[in-house]
Length: 386
Image (tube, rainbow, N blue to C red; front, side):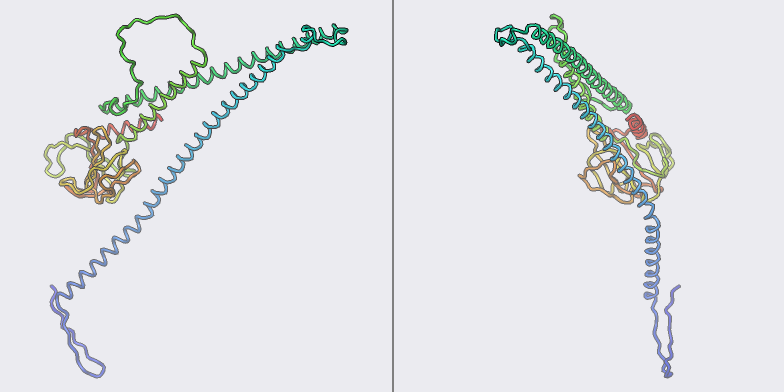
């Protein structure tokens, strides 16, 4: 197909010249042209796809910025509310202190008291009616101050009661949120006590006798406030633990954007030999090069080609929970790297035992495969109820 070419050239002076183009030279020339064409096609494809990837990254960045601004706004409003309450309490307290000192001063040495002690001047003794008038006026002023003090004390008590109720309601809301999250985790067949050791208050130590008693002593308002605050702090700490545990659980979808589930979890016909087989994960169909995200916080324990799985990444989320991402075209993480739900662990590919571009995604608990659809469903419910 590629014979040697004999080329004859005649110069202007009439002198002839001959040279031969060998078969190996022709093959080298054709291979170079093919490489240039392939390189041009790949470069063109990459340049065409680059704006879409940049637009997707820009959208993600805008969403993160909006979420950060919303969180900052909520934090600022909460800080302002707490500051206003603290300022109001301080003002009421200072007013009570001032009125108390004034009342004590009036009760210790009211006008006319020196007359009762015999220390009055002759002019004051000559005018007893005026002194009695002053005594009556001071007594009326003291009564008015005491009435105002009582009103201020009642106002402060109402403020303390509102504060206590708000703390109790917040603690109850946190407890409800914790209970809802525990029910969601129970749907996955996971042990909540193992995942969230601090999700419930510690049980009291067992007593040798079950009898109880003693006189009834009403709790002071300050004791109620302290109990409400302790309960609130405890529930907030527990909720922080629950949120941290939920961040570690693989509840997100590994592929964002356009994709489809090509094969579900469980029994199926094998795509290569069409025999009945067990599928231990989900197959997400997506174009080659689509980013694959970690579905929860964890540590990469495998990032290399692996037998029938092709390019594979495994992430350990703790408590025996592991996620597996297989058939990737490229791995983007390293073994020992910590990842979050915003970390790209690899790109969709067609490596290993595969019939086309897709992601094989598994969730294993104590090396037992679990249906990823259940985890994704719980993740959606949790986001709806935030």
